[in-house]
Image 1 (cartoon, one colour):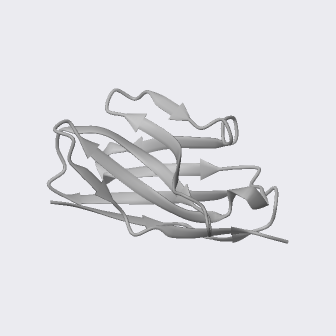
Image 2 (image 1 turned 90 degrees about the horizontal axis):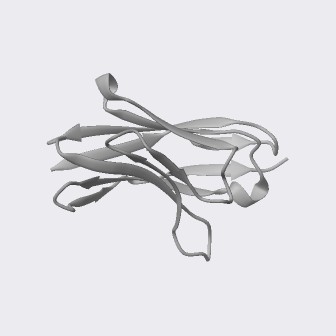
Length: 116
């Protein structure tokens, strides 16, 4: 079993920055990729960014050049650095882990509010 715990959300003004963290614990091995998703009220959950086991990164067009996904293997942590935040970025952000055998795990989410 794998547990994912997100943190780092909060209230930020438009144009501001936040760094989200996702700490993985448990049977962490054979990770294929980890990613961040978000879900705003009344909307479906949408993909934000992916970091593969080889270190490749992918971003949704809406966050490209503003968000950066990275990891610290020693801390079993994946980060999402979010800059130039917009009101449209407000959502609950979720961390996802997918193993090589396609097992899938989600965190509980962390709220990001962008408002002046």
